[in-house]
Length: 282
Image (tube, rainbow, N blue to C red; front, side, top):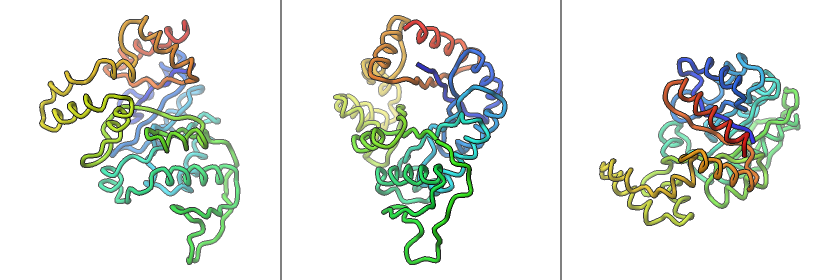
């Protein structure tokens, strides 16, 4: 089992942290993309300053780039990093896509499917002809041509950030893996993460947490989060408890853990060392 860590490459000291993490045996550095720095540019700098670390996006927002451009960016990083790049993608949510990118948030599962299909075609060097619903290429009733990519073909591992049943099914069908995190994503009365936790049986508790948070009763909201939910979705507790959770992950086929550490760099490195030791012993 490999251990990766989420890092904002533009943060002061991030490259030196990545180098020290590489020395510890960390498997990869993953870069987020929200509504600020992009997820790709900083990874090229980290890749240039390391030699074995995998570099991955967690996760590129679909719709912010055309699938063909995304494929070209991914292949560029794959070539220049010596095949160390992993493409993590996600549809984000309407608040970000429509508020930040000005792109309508519609049919997220189909958007994910067609993006993967097009990235695969470009990565193989196939002539790009895609009769899709979201991305029909060439564009019908246009002057567009069927174009052969000017790239060196290479495999780009694709990871999908997914929560819903349909997207999870699609991930199992087409992707190399999936990524999971906790957060607020959605709009209005819809929160994709809350929906996911409701499917796990925490609907009543999550509704109460959301109500308290919206009323700005933040301390009460934090206190209302079920401890079981925290232990199910985070590596917290004693070393024995964390080791047990790692073993459960290993048994179901999870082969990479993405750590989201915080605090000064030295504290993050210490936490990573502890996790690496636990993983090595389980």
